[in-house]
Every structure is written in C-alpha cells, then in structure tokens.
Image (cartoon, rainbow, N blue to C red; front, side):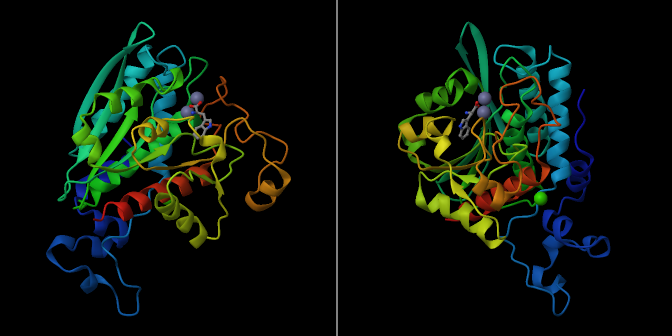
Length: 329
Ligand code: DTR
Ligand code: CA
Ligand code: ZN
Ligand code: ZN
C-alpha cells in the first residue's frame, strides 16, 4: 500500500500550521494559537501575514506521484475509468483528506458500462460563498498517467492538506474535487454540475482547474477565461520573474469547461501537452524548442520520470496562493 508522505504526518502531529510552516524548531514549540503572530517575529524580520499561503513542500507532492505510480503498477498499469487503479486512487486521496479533517463525499456515476467516481472534499468557511479547485484523477488505459493527471491531483491534494495544517479559517468554503472519467469526455465533472442544484451552483465564486502541471518540457500557461482569476496566477508568476502565456490549448479541453458551460467563472494552470515548444518559448522558459511540452502525453512513458519538478513545485505553490487569496470575501 502507498504510505502517507512523512512530512504530512509530522505537520499534522504539530497541529499548528503557521508555526510549522514558518518558524524554526525552537520557536515552533511556542503555541501559535496562543500568541499573536507578530510577537513571534524577531526584530527586523519581515512581518508575518497570517493570510499568506504556505510554501507547498514539493517532496510531499512528489510522494503522492510515487503513490499513484505504485497504485497503477499494482492494478494492471493504469488508473483508468472503470479499472481497479481508479478506485484505488480515489481511496488513496480520500484517506488523506479524511485524516486531515475534511468532509468528503464520493459521487458515483455510470458511463461506458462502468461506474465512475468523483471525490469532493469541503473545508467550511464563514460566508455562503464557495471556491473550488479540482483535477481529474483518471488516467488513460495506456499508462499510469503521472503528468496527466497525477500532477494536478497531487497539487490539489497537497494544497488541501496545507489548508488543514494551517487550520485555515476561510471566509469562503473551500471545496476540492477529483474528477472521474475526464479522459472519456469530461464525464465526471459534467455529472457533478448537472446534478448540483442551481442554488448550490450560484454559491460557486469560481472553479480552478489543474490538468497537466508538471510537463517535462514545461511551459507556464494560465487560463485566460476570467480576468480576475487569471490575474491571481499571472501576478504570482510575474512577482517571481517567470513569464506566462494564455492557455489557448486549454479551451474546452478539461474539466473547467463543465463549469464554464453553467456560468461559473473558471481559471487554472497548464504546462502543455502534445503541442511543440517554440524557440521563443524555449528562450524564456528553458527546455527544448521543437519538442512537445509532454512527449509522453497519453503514453506508457507518462511515469514519475515524466515530470519537471520545478514546474510542478511552482504550479503547486501558485495553486495554494490562489486558494488562500481567493478564499477571502
Ligand atoms: N485534457 C487533457 C489534455 C489537454 C489538452 N489541452 C489542455 C489544456 C489544459 C488542460 C489540459 C489539456 C487530457 O486530459 O488529456
Ligand atoms: Ca513549493
Ligand atoms: Zn489526458
Ligand atoms: Zn488531463
């Protein structure tokens, strides 16, 4: 069985996300909840902002990828809809969320003669608004689906676990989702929006999608469907001197399209699929011009070797930043 990443377990045991994320061992013993954050800051150090997102530990994200790869290996080499590797992937994510205090729901549906599942996890907020972030959890039958889309699944999972470690008290309810049967035509996410009552759909302030966020020959693409959501991401990258481009390859091609159809503002990140990186893109992002962003797209070689760790780390941190920022109000 895949094991929980050790860092998650340690952080959970500490129980004070802010202290665990930001302070040294000596100071971490100090109960963060009992003292205002500024009192813990040494003179001259930058002020702590309790609303700032933590750095998402890339080691934890990669540990989830390894777990998904093991799940595929133990279940005929894939995690596809209707195959045992898909259900095992749902169980893996659900266990970690349940242990972290989320309210989880498994929604089943039938397509292509098999039962599929969406996993939804809520972290309650104070207002009536809901912010969603999601990723499809199914692979194609050809392989383990690690860039497509264990990468997005792991980044969303680790962000959710970071919310729990920080004991975040958001204004909005935070809702994290892992979709089934995306590869068969966005089936799971479409089922979710079609079965959600209109009053519940109206609570959704936005849906953020993460599908392929660790492509080996990565580009930094930001969905340009909603200007406000787009800006949260583009600003995060600009602040770090990383160029981005609008994700024109994204239109209608992943689960955000299901939300767009019913009028929910959407955003997201993408590092490229089978399109070729241009010379200009290689100039600004590095990598190989004239080669696909992901040469193993939908292939058996989409394994843990098919990941650009820097891209996955940046996108995971940007995801957490967006969730923290957009949780307000
Ligand atoms: N939906 C993806 C492939 C894909 C193609 N273009 C984009 C843009 C944004 C996200 C994903 C994609 C798949 O699962 O195969
Ligand atoms: Ca990080
Ligand atoms: Zn795919
Ligand atoms: Zn995908």
